Image (cartoon, rainbow, N blue to C red; front, side, top):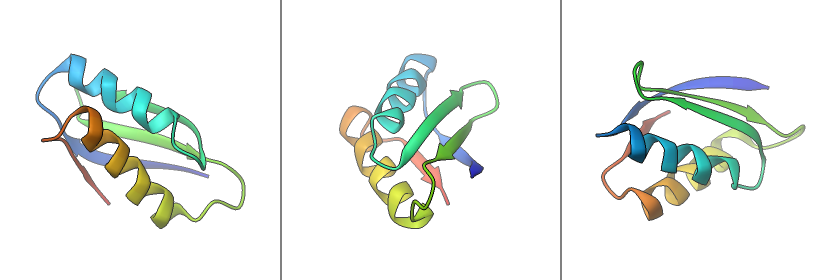
Length: 72
């Protein structure tokens, strides 16, 4: 399953850090962050609980970029 989320991040480097943090989250098969459109596309592992995985993605992203936000 793939979903797209609106994000709030200040710079392209920070967006790159968010992408790497999301990719390392359990339950995420792949993630792509587009700084220009302020969107994150997430592909989930089969049978993943999307809401709990996204909560963990947000926690992991905040570890590398404390003022980022993901709207889900």
